[in-house]
Length: 325
Image (cartoon, rainbow, N blue to C red; front, top):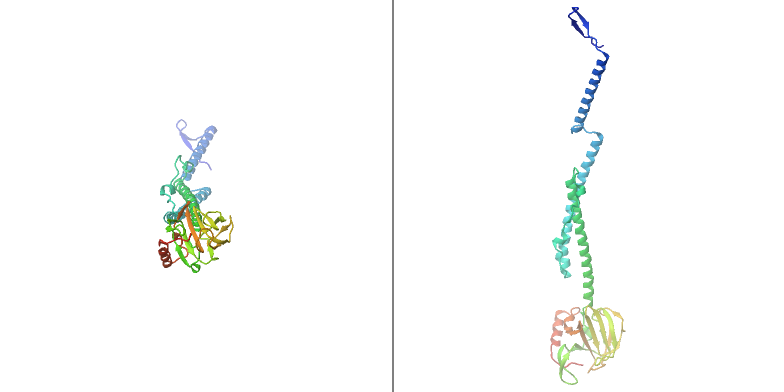
């Protein structure tokens, strides 16, 4: 029940009831409602701005942000592990793989170069966790670039390894006649006495004496370029192109076991010892050429001679005697 208010009327010397007009009542009510509304809005804004009270949506979003931050921190730790593994691979690549295959190491400037130019990460700025997002993105970009560089390096090393394997297969490395079949090593490379003119002339190969029909072996992988008797003095002979500038020649054969254009492997029987052409006795005249020039074959027997056998052959090859062709 509303309180009734009175005032003292001095004229009538009595208390009279205070009558409030309807307009004033309405005005008072509206003022109260407005004040209450303003107070309510202000209080609500205060509650919304204080961290002590959050809406369910804000709570969910805050939890999601914390999860994202945790994921980024875990990603940072994993990237640190990847960087350590990649550093180890890069070190092995420079110090071992590229050294073995005689390739220049890749500099640190190339491996770990950043990304220049305009700000690549401007679109990531302005967020609550921009620092960790930008830092993680930068590290990922650098890691990606390093992995591309390392992948290309391994591709190059693989190619170099294949080339090296082909080179090793191309270099002559065994005797053309087995030790068990040799009568002796008759004459070596260098200045020797011609058996027909008795004059000194340069002997471009080595003479191996062996019985007629003794097997002759390809000293390395290659392709038969010639198997004929159309070269003066050599009689029946074979020439093999091994690639990388290496060719070998086998002369004075009795017969062939290969034909022109045939691909052979190291150790394949290509022909048999004979006494054809400009020859004094059954033997094999063997030459090694590098880039078109004859070189001493004594340097190409590493594949099947032990140190003692090599020393004995070297001593025999250095004797200045008479050649057999």
